[in-house]
Amino acid sequence: MNDSAAKTSERLEQEAVAWHVRLTSGDISTVERARFEAWRKQSPAHDHSYRQIENLWRMMDAPVIADRQRRRKPGKTAKPAHSLRWSVGLAVAASLLLTATLGMFPDYLREPWADYSTHIGERTSIRLEDGSVAHLNTDTAFDVSWRDNERRVVLFRGEAEFEVAHDSSRPFRVQAGNTVTEALGTRFIVRYDDSAGAVTLLEGKVRTEQTKRQGTFITLHPGQRATFDAQSLSGVLAADVSAAEAWRRGRLIMNFVTLKQVVAEINRYHRGQVTLLGDTLADKEINVAIDLNNIDVWLDTLKDTLPIKIRRVGPFVFLQS
Image (cartoon, rainbow, N blue to C red; front, side, top):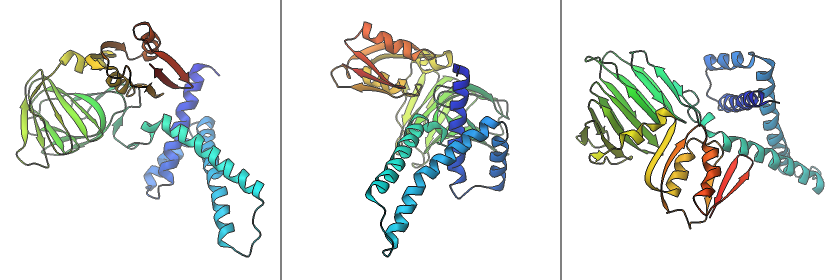
């Protein structure tokens, strides 16, 4: 199987996982089910990928159900020990396989029905209905809502740069958790991960407000940023604009940061988790300029500048000091 075929097979498997989770959630509409059937009929490969996931779930469920039924019927003869061990072993093996799959592709299951999204390592640009342009960074998902008096984007996770089309009658607002940023004819970046994030202004002006604390807001000017979490909003901070939007150019630029911070940032773009073993070099301060399309190349050359060993286990990378 060549690289292109392998990537296609991998993509279909993950789409099949997402569909199966949705179908077994107990909350799927007729329209969504029709979309699934249309997806499955696209090609024999689509159907094969879904049947594989179905079979995997059956392998996991059958031994567990059988064992529960056995234990609920005291008059029945118990399974031989070797048969039970085989059943449990089969379930564990299938469970580990599924866990590994979902661990490698968590982005396929988070907000799978968002209006716009990217997977890990993917970046794209979208022209919205109002003429605004959204540039989505890696592992990003958001919904849009157009009303007579407002244009609203709800950012579920990730990072996006917005170039806002002027419309004085309909403010353009980006909601990330409890924080809402209103554009005043502008270009800005919003990042949101694990209930915390940042707003960086590139051009124009924005007003950022904490919805849980009425009256708590700040106004940003070009070259400024603000950070926030579920409860608070920082004051105005200076921003490194070039570094903040470097991902648009396919670069990751970080200055005067620790190695562990760099590793955490790399993991946003790298599907196989990169893990730093030991804390000898974790707090070492470094500057990096990484080609986001060649992260593995940068990792391989890291040992030329730091006393570090690179260990690879399948798609996972371990850095050992």
